[in-house]
Image 1 (cartoon, rainbow, N blue to C red):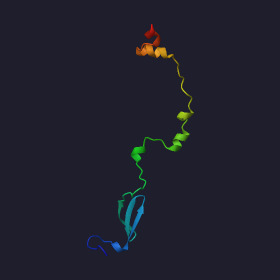
Image 2 (image 1 turned 90 degrees about the horizontal axis):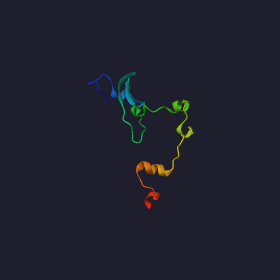
Image 3 (image 1 turned 135 degrees about the vertical axis):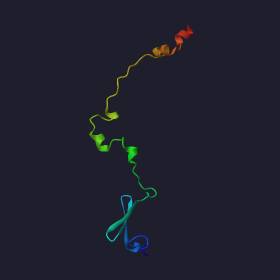
Image 4 (image 1 turned 180 degrees about the vertical axis):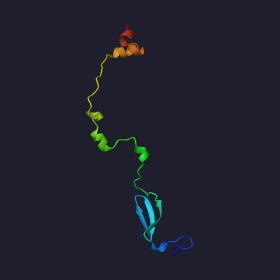
Length: 98
């Protein structure tokens, strides 16, 4: 099976190689053409654009700031519930009874 009419290489004496998602055809020690291959079912496909803003694991480990669960808790201010009632305009039980 040759294709001398259309090109000067023989299809029966060619090699098909697949590497890093590219199928290439070689004949007589020269690359005839290369084409990107489609991923197979359930094959992992990297999406570089989707993850370009996410830091790598090694960069996160080297980061000088600790992770959220390692940071101290923020200072919390406690107020009596009557203050919230006043802010919201809700009558307290003492005012209703009186």
